[in-house]
Length: 336
Ligand code: PBG
Image 1: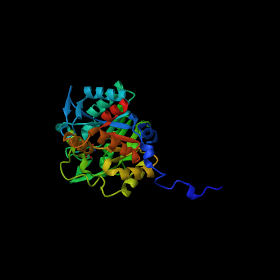
Image 2: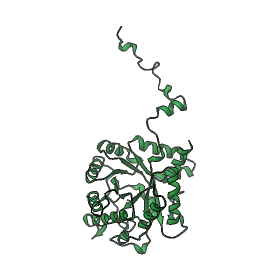
Image 3: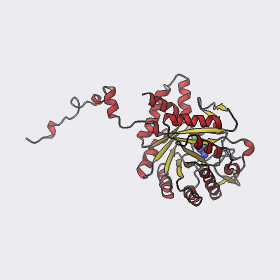
């Protein structure tokens, strides 16, 4: 006798979704996505000085660390199984100018940080932020001329900055500036200076977002005039993000990134389906602050909201997640 449709289970009561959810072991076996310590990039904010551990008021439990403590932190993250750190530096006001001169100082804080961390924890992947904003007297990601952020002159400095970081030993440079053409120029500059193995983590679809506020507090890097809408992307757009990611892939990006995370998971999915390089997502400072604040008010369960956010990033298609939760999430993952 041939099977007919009428002999197949066809909906309730034969078909019951709860069968697959009824025990922890079934749920564990059938989970479509899971978090692992190797999914994370942990951002590290570095400040001048010694023994410095400055709290960042809008980012509870996150600190700016001087290099001695930052190296220790990096070592402990490596030991927990976190594969990578993303370095940002806080630059004192007197070292800021329009051209980002301090960014090219071979003995600058970023360069020293890369060297010290690679020396002490060689197995940890070190990524460096490449943009002018922490070094800029205007708080913009590029050079300002007549009130405008000029593209090609900025790209020139960014490429030199990337080479500088590669010379210090950076494994990946991470341009977060959104200037046009910088990935290709950085790739060419790295090759020309003899760094074929230094990767580029491109902030390909970085939006002009309201969720960066706490980060700008952390680095004292808020724009001094205007906003970043002439270079960062319009939150209304998704096709444009795909185009940016494809251009960066073609220019030689090794990883493309979407930023922020949770409000842009549709963009993560679209980019995932359009490129063949790994896709990262940046779960940004404002996303962290929202959960922290609600948890402090007793309105949200911090751990549950954190893990759900991170898992959502993976479900959307991210291969790797830059997040201020890295340490806490990995500690939880290692416990279970
Ligand atoms: C600056 C930069 C920013 C972030 C990373 N790199 C802020 C900005 O563009 O103003 C934001 C990260 C965060 O909010 O966690 N190049």
